[in-house]
Amino acid sequence: MGITLTQQAADHINRYIEKRGKGLGLRLAVKTTGCSGLAYKLEYVDEPNPNDLLCEQLGVRVYIDQKSLPFVDGTQLDYAREGLNEGFKFSNPNEKASCGCGESFTV
Image (cartoon, rainbow, N blue to C red):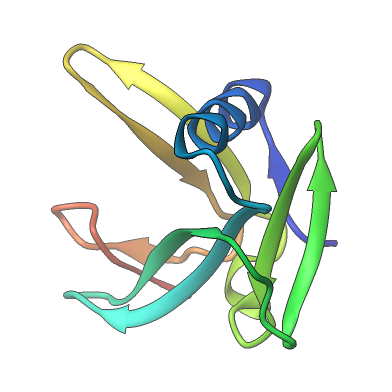
């Protein structure tokens, strides 16, 4: 299944890669951290890892760490601006709870 991107997320990723002057796409993974146990990790990809799964949408390549896929499968990645804050927003159907500060989640 993989993940889905909104047009706003795809546009932001493409603009940032263009601004960087290099990059193949974005890597999505989870790491163990925070109050609830897991946190999303995003990084721009210059060279894919052998264990990355590729999900391509709206002209954007998203590389998903294979070990992270069970935690993020079905997630929608959006990019939103709210007042002075802006950033990626995750709508993850696997998420059961998140910490009060919104930095970590559990499945």
